[in-house]
Amino acid sequence: MANAEASLLSLATSKTDLMQIEKVQNELKLSEYCLQDFEEGLEDLLRGLIKIRVNILNILNN
Image (cartoon, rainbow, N blue to C red):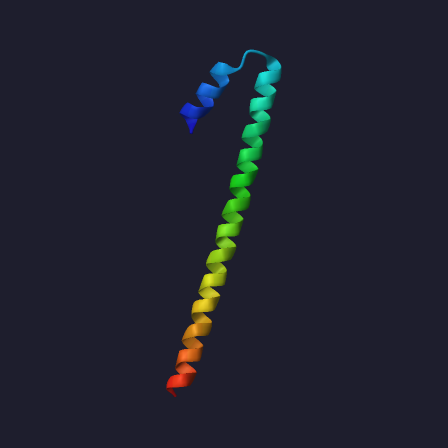
């Protein structure tokens, strides 16, 4: 990641380019945070579904 950032910054030819690069980097960070939250939500959902499945199997076996 650091290499990619260094490459982007080396391509910048003006202050405007630097500002645009920083804006894109910030948007990418926000997207990453959103994806992490989404992934955590999916993991919680999966755990809940597994618990429900176990409960149903326990009910059927008794």
